[in-house]
Image (cartoon, rainbow, N blue to C red; front, side, top):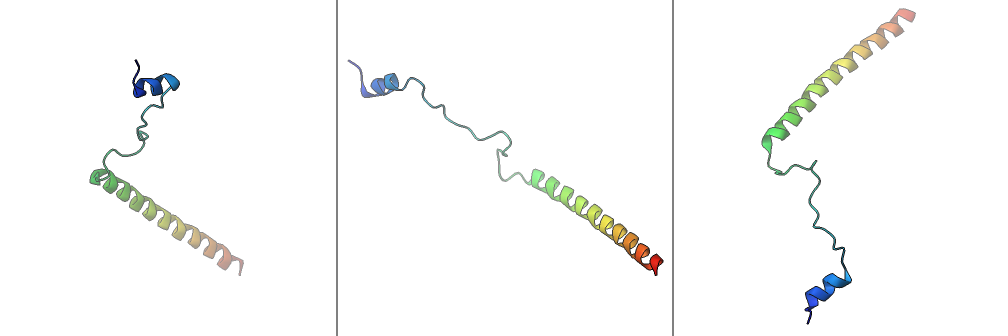
Length: 68
């Protein structure tokens, strides 16, 4: 005599496996080291982009003033 759980398994032989989070997600959300590194990287990139904006602005202003 089969129990209900065995009947359910027999009617659904391909059970859905338990899902785990993708490996790209951090395992611990309180990882301050990773957050600090990301913040430092963003700050460094921000400085570089600001310098590029200043350089390009100077080039445009020189080009405009040279035409006049």
